[in-house]
Structures are given as C-alpha cells and as structure tokens.
Length: 406
View 1 (tube, rainbow, N blue to C red):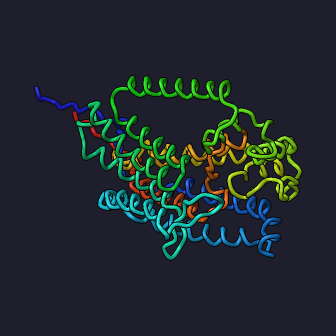
View 2 (cartoon, rainbow, N blue to C red):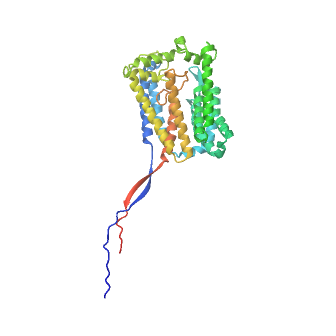
View 3 (cartoon, one colour):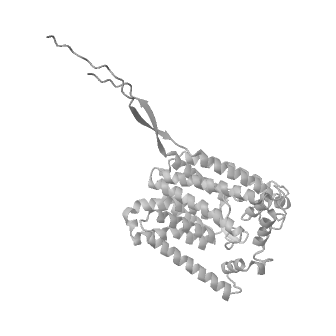
C-alpha cells in the first residue's frame, strides 16, 4: 500500500507587533512663550503705571517704558543664546561666579557703589547693576555643584550644616554689604530648598521650620504688645505693618494707597490707563507696587489672569526639573523655580500687606533692567536644561505574516 502524505493547509498568523523606540528632541517653547507673554504684559502695565511720573520728571511719558522695552528685548535674546549652551559648562564657572559675587557685593561699599532712594545696592562698572542679583544665580549654579561634589557626605548633619553655611553666606553678604534683606531671605530660601530636595530625611527640616515659625510668631507678638516705636529701620517697618492705620501718612503711606487702589478696582477694574492712585499717590508705582495698579485698572479679573500666567510659567519650570536628564540640571531648575516663586509670593504679599515691606520686584513686570536681565538669564539656563531632555516615542511595525508549515 502506497504511503500518501497529507499536508495541513497554511494559515495566516495574527500580525505580531514590534515596538521600535526613537529618541525625540525637546525644547520647552511653552516656557519661552509664557515668559514673553509676561514681559509684554509687564511692558503694557509699566507704561500705564509710569507715564504720568515720566512726563513730570523727564518730559517724556515713555521714558521708563523705552528703557525697559530695550532691556527686555536684549534679555530675551540673552535667554535664547543661553538656551543654546550646554548647562553642564556652568559647573566649570560655578565656583568662580560664587566668589565673584562676594567681591562685587563688597565693592558696593566703595566709591564704585551707587545710592538710590536711600539704599546703597548698586554698582557702576561701565553699566549700573545690583550685584545681589548675580548672587542669586551664583547660589543656583554653585549649590548643586557642591551637592554633587560632596556625594554621600551630604547625608550627614555636618554635611548639611556646611552646605547651608556656604549658601546662606551669600545672603549674609547681601544683607551686610548691600543692605538688602529681601535678597538675603530669597538666597537662604533657595539654598534650603535645594538641600532639602536631596537630603534623605525630612524630619530635621520640619523641626527647624517649626522652631523658626514659632520664634517669628513670638517676636511679632512681643513687638505688637510691648513695643510702640523704635529707632531701628527694620523694626519700624514691622511696627508699621502691624499697625498701618497709625502711620497711614508716614511709613504705611505707600501700602495704604496700594490697598485703596486694589479696593477701588472691583472685579473688572476701571480700565487700562484709568488708575487714579498712580498719579503721584503711590510712590514709585512702576516698581514694587505695580500689582496694585494692575488690580485698580484690570480688577480682580486681570490680577487672576496674571497669577495664572505666573502659575503656568512655574509649572513649566517644575516640568523641566522633573524630567531633567541628571541631578545637576534638576537642581538648577528647582533653584530657579524657588527663586521665581518666592519673588512673586513676596511681592504680592507686600502689596496686600500680608507681610512687611521688603522691596522685592514682581518678575518680568516691575521696572528694573538688572532684574529682567538676570531673570531672563535664569530662564535661558532652564531652557538649556530642557534641550537635554530626551523622550522616547514608541512606533509600531507589523512584522508580516508568520507561516506555519505542516
């Protein structure tokens, strides 16, 4: 009997999908766009807040606006240029920048220092600028560098104390040599948060924070009950803050006028350019108190829109910090985030009289060339970190038919 071969029919298998990953370059255009929007908004409000004073003082209602617009355009270009530079190069100049900021703040006490509005905080070396602004960037790039250098030593209490002393020393110099307490507090805040992010234990920071808050509360209680007047400038500011109505025509004049402006703005405001309080009533309305003019002219609606813009900018910084390719980049952007957030919070709290007057500007909105330049430099550094982020994108391919032979 002849053998016959029986073959099974060929069947088509289900297509097997194979995932292929490719790296996708990234650049945070959303952060750049949010900062440009904030800058443009700030220029519009700056012109509105400063036009009257500029006309009276300089005979040109665009005097403040013109200077700020020119600096802002240059600052945006600087941010774009910085974003093209690998942020790892900052590690090579971190120590030099940190040391240079000490020297520049010392020079403020020499004839090179410039006094304005009763404060000696500026330095004139061809151009006039505030060395304390450089100190903020110096801390932001140097503390992460030291964290990487110290390695496991940072896990000890001694290592944390040494690093805190290094960071806060810049704040001490800012207070002693430029009489800028607000900058000293911001520098200390940046240092503490960056160290907190890498230190494995949270308890010591919570205890220190609780003790600090308790001490401040007791001090304020003592001042409000036992002290009515003081020759100290700082204590005088705190007393003015605790009892603003008693010095409404003196120390609390600026804050009270700002509160009147905010209250009169209502929900939608009086309209752009229609502020009454800015006309010689709020001193230096284009500087620290510009938020009160925004509230008067654009109302609560405009103020909330501005806060949403700030919130989105901070969200983009948080996103970059979370996705940075290494610890150094993550810590740098975290320091920038803390700096921006502290300035926004402190400025608005001062305008609302929640805290005593500090002299902190509103980022990208208040008048001040030095502030805009250094803030934009920080944004450029954050964008540089964002360029190093690599996402993996999955693509699917069919592997074709799989044949099964009998």
